[in-house]
Length: 325
Image (cartoon, rainbow, N blue to C red; front, side, top):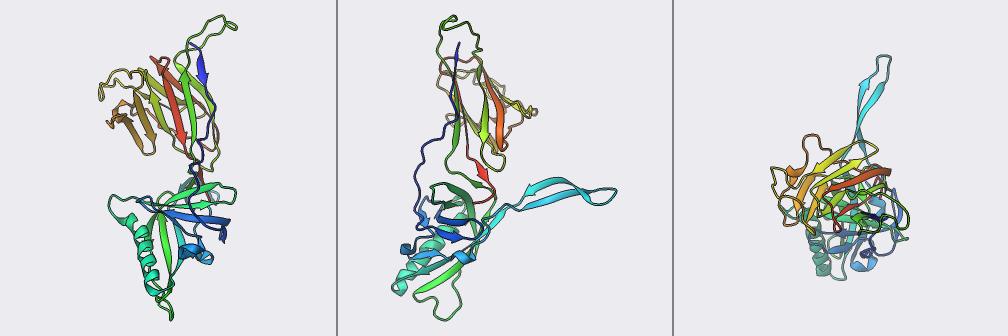
């Protein structure tokens, strides 16, 4: 059965959130900024007409990731680097809030304080800080409010204007591109063996391809498998790492995936979910499985399905990650 292979595709840009006029931000240059709170409300941070704006001179924490180094002493002096661990990032973001009258300023101050501090509520999750460049490219990072939403104890502040210096804590210090990169592989329809010339193609191999990660660090992709399939093997040819999903494993007992049925595999943290939400993590071939990631640059990968048919497909999706905004 011939195989249809599709190139890496990029979904359409979902649109730029409000940010205002580009301003010079330390460590990264001219950009606009916005904050999306856990409820999904977008707050422009560099729009002078919003009634609040960023005091750019005090911004910090947008540069390269900080690393903690582990080393072993060398017998003849010096040390050898054994491991580098990326550390959580803290971003300092000063905001100036103003109003034509006192209560205008107070309403804005309270609303902004709630937008940031709600990241501390149980079940709410982080907010998202986004930096947009004049060319339309954007990078995001998830943030939690740490401290700093306090007024200035200075004469003249607190009546029509005040400022706060926020500390935003980021458990993942890397910035991500909000526009995902996707790879799609599916089986094709049967054709003549002799047209246009003799060829042989395995119906089990959906794609041996090069996936390019344009980011600065390893990304951990999400996989969506669409049946029919009886066994799915994912292999990183460059590292030799592999993992297998068996929908008929004893821990699951579902049997072969039927046409149109889907399973989603998340690699960081490792989770496997059937289309109805059932936990299929037991279908992975533990303990030998390695839910591998994609290193920066080119990655040679292969997706192989047993029991595949005309509707079988595998989709790989990831968002590149970067050192700086």
